[in-house]
Amino acid sequence: MALTLRSSTSFINLKDNRSFKTPDDFSSIVGFAQIKPSCQLRSKNSTQEAQTAWPERASLLAEGRKNERREKLHGLAGPQSHNNLRVPVFVMLPLDTISIGGSLNKPRAMLASLVALKSAGVEGVMVDAWWGLVEKDGPLKYNWEGYAELIKMVEKLGLKLQVVMSFHQCGGNVGDSCSIPLPPWVLEEISKNPDLVYTDRSGRRNPEYISLGCDSLPVLRGRTPIQVYSDYMRSFRERFKDYLGDVVVEIQVGMGPCGELRYPSYPESNGTWRFPGIGEFQCYDKYMRASLEAAAKAIGKDDWGRGGPHDAGQYNQFPENTGFFGRDGTWNGEYGQFFLKWYSEKLIDHGEKILTTAERIFQGTGAKLSGKVAGIHWHYKTRSHAAELTAGYYNTRHRDGYLAIARMFSKHGVVFNFTCMEMRDGEQPGEANCSPEGLVRQVKLATKTAGAELAGENALERYDGGAFSQVLATGRSGSGNGLNAFTYLRMNKRLFEADNWRNFVEFVRSMSEGGQNTRLPDSDRIGTDLYVGFIKQNNVRKTCEAALV
Image 1 (spheres, one colour):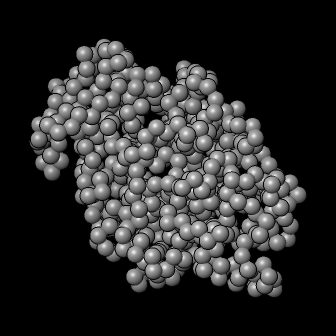
Image 2: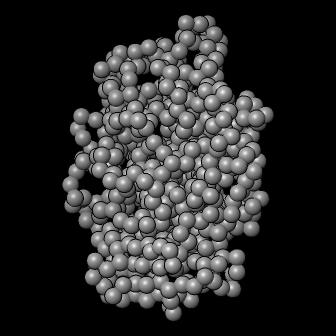
Image 3: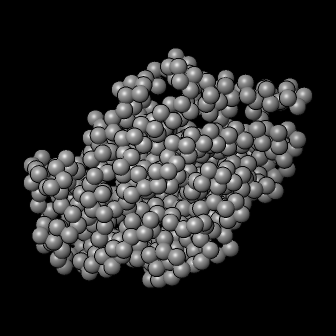
């Protein structure tokens, strides 16, 4: 027997609150029965059918209902200091939750999915508010209608929402299943002035995100990028002011590619970069070059301002194959220290500018602010930490590159959101010198020292008990910060397959118990090779996925 969601037109008419069902109303609509793993969840309408495998036993969902009592996200006075605190779990929605036309994609399937997540005990979901969709029709012309429909749906189900201010393009990176470019009018300005985007040493332009080099210049039809981002966030605040702090509990402020505070040093598009390459510095647009030149002149070293390191290699090289990143390379010399300090401080200053305005816009709304930092764990065991350096994190064996970021976040009351919480050192290829566990430990200590709250995500799609167990372990405070929240990547068909769903429900329950209840397996029973390159090579679908399609 399958679980079937029966609906009429009025059932999903969110403009009419009287016809929208609350979770308590679902007893007459949704029936759970003991089923075989091969049975599927169906959400039917006249034109489409969204199917997904459902757990073997409805008892798993019933167990999830024990977690109905909700708490405010990050409701603590400060960072966690005990191991027995509840960690709320959120789930990322599909990248194309909102369609190109600005409407909510497949609302019936989305509703069925959210009901299931609610039953599992999750706190809420996360959605990207794409700049390329919302301000698509022209400067200051915003379309929030699809997001309004989603927010009302989330509210009626008693869930919470994290919203990402996504000022980057979707497409060309790990896990990107669809393409959402920057707004057309922005792309038009880029075509007129290609230096508006990040550029590498060979002149390759990257259209993922506007270069921080022009943050304060009126290059976007009379507005600076910071003003554009500010106007966008202010529009969101005004449109959803009645939901902020209650339904919309967190605003994650995008500050770079993939929404992360970093340079686009390892772009996957067109095969430019492959794991575990060191990446390349992104400082060759005319605005970044002018800044570097000025910084060099200020210390009387004009020659140092002519460009980035000439011996830093190419995207897919290893540190030891370059003069700059090698064991005794120039990264640790006088010039190397000057350049890396300038490069990393430009990034932190970029974050400072955006978060300063975000803090001002959302102050008093009750919504928490967060910022995301990438978990670049490859070559972490080397002296130079080359892959981190090209991304803008001045983190080496002799220097903590995350403490300055954590302090900047703490200054603005921003949660430090970090990835790769699910990864273990033993799963990574030996030649890549990876240490995701060491990196997470360092970040936990840095955020604790800075007084910043810490939240986490998994970097890659994982469904196995070993990954969940690792999150439970890293989520406990130990010698550094514990997690105040965890956002799981991501909701799709595979999550609802019987074994995956069972693991996920158990994980959510364990997180609600402070990570003390660890019934999940200690290892990945699938095998090893769970790293970026492997996931990329085995990603069988490159087209857009809507919720449960």
